Image (cartoon, rainbow, N blue to C red; front, side, top):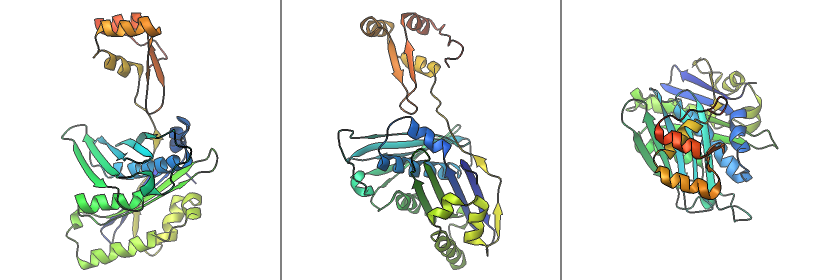
Amino acid sequence: MAFDQLHRYLFNQGNVRGEMVRLEKSFQAILDSYPYPPVIQQLLGELMAAASLLTATLKFEGDIAIQIQGEGALSYAVINGTHNQQLRGVARWDEALKTLPTNFNELIQKGVLVITITPEHGERYQGMVALDRPTLAECIEGYFEQSEQLATKVILRTQLIKNQAKACGMFLQILPTSSQATDKVDTAFEHLSALTDTIKNEELFGLSAEDILHRLYHQEDIELYPATEVVFKCNCSKERSAIALSGLSKEELLEIIAKDGDIKMNCQYCHTEYSFDAIDVESIHAGTFNIPVGQG
């Protein structure tokens, strides 16, 4: 069975689209970047699956950021996804706590879910919904109910077994052209949603995508599209860090180097560290900074 793939499918007789994503190496890459507690790992897995599913709904080149902000033990978590299914993410929590709440609403108190869509060409769009439902999946369903008035079903699951973390997600939605749906379309969606709810973890994590779809919808007319690869990819680089440093004065940068020996910049997503010395600072402000081979 293949993981790190997104599958899109269409129910031809129901005016409903579906998606399924299953992540392993891409999810593990995020977990390898920092020692996240299990409850944070689970949340990141759900967020990552959700980001992949929502990114797949884009009709243009661009990206989606799914961000959680709260006042509980977890203060911040975000997954960024591009139109070609490149994902990265990070979470922040109170690391002074010896134990963390396992209940979703206790972990993220007074939380909000912020979804930001940024096309490469066009205006940025941002939507927000309160995290006032028992699960992240239900909160995302609420987001679509509130922002687009589209009936939506979301399933998010995470499996944590030593160094073999996996995350899966399923997504059903009435096609936008059917937003003023007839009773027949509503009934079809409710039927498909009920079928989707019957999926078991051992099936979602253990069967092939084709077998899962057959298991759930063997009586339905489904059009399955070619799978899309999903990867973890951070777009940080020494060049991007140099551009950030160019916004500070040369004198200020040289003072830091005189005190600390160099300037270190750490990527919040993959935790790659980039260092700059006085020669780098001079070339950055002269506009002649070149990245040595192998350090990009």
